[in-house]
Image (cartoon, rainbow, N blue to C red; front, side, top):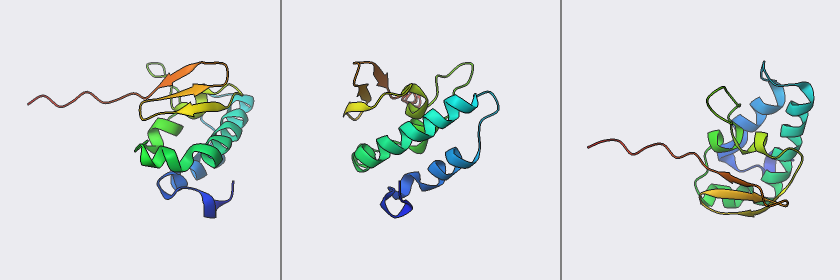
Length: 105
C-alpha cells in the first residue's frame, strides 16, 4: 500500500506494524497481519475512517486478555463487509469492535 493513499489516522500504526514485530507473535503471523491489514486498508480504509475505527481497533497486538485488533483476526482471509461495529470475512467469521464501557456518571 502506498503511503499517499493511506488514510491519515492509520499512518503511524501502519508503519509500526511493518517495522516492529511483537515479541509473542511468530514471524509468519506477523507477515500475515501486515499483508491482511494492507489489503484491508486498500479496500476499506476510508470507510473505516468514516466509521471512526481507531488504530487500536485495527492494529492492537493480541494479549492474554485481548484478541487484538482486526489485523490479527484475519488468518489470511479478506473482509467482505464492514460496519460501524463489526467486520465479516469471506468465510462469515465476525470480528466485533471492542467498545470501552461508558464512564459512570
